[in-house]
Image (tube, rainbow, N blue to C red; front, side):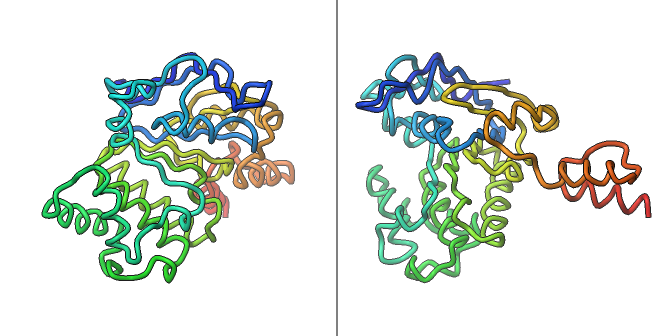
Length: 276
């Protein structure tokens, strides 16, 4: 598959810290895929996320985005146009007094002409279902709506990749579903590459691939079905099993004749209906 991002032998040290936060990480991100990078707090996953659009630069190694390199001054603006970041707290991302002003701010930084700017703002809010809130003050929105506006601001810049850096961790269940479904539609229908940085394994279940980070290193990589069978690995990385998998195993231990342990709630419910 075609790679859109390549992380090659990347090590990173925060100033004043003896132990590297990232240690020789190598990773390919395929064009159009949904990749989840999971790990416990301190595993290095959010530091890795910030490497992907040049918010942090490697102490050693190289990050390539398309034909550009994050460490080259002439490339960095193209890298940041191609890779959009959505962070944990949406309130920290707003700078405008209205939804449209906030989206316009990022476009102004990239020198987009006004006529083109208006077009992109209208298109981006429509893509995340927020066109009715153009003149709304951001602080009046729900958590899920704020994150959808943040995503619209990124979409207006026409990125190839969206990085969700713990972007759903502060949301209630409804807001979390809103954001994940919005991004999933962009991924499936428009081919935008999605990189989800999370410690929530339920969120990672819908990914095409999963990378497990542990103490600054890539501990495992594969499709969800394979990764979530590696119980000892997940436990050693400080991660819990998805709820559906744990419930499946508990039911089998109680004598319920399930043919396997199921990863998603939908699969488990369908299997139980067949036994009824």
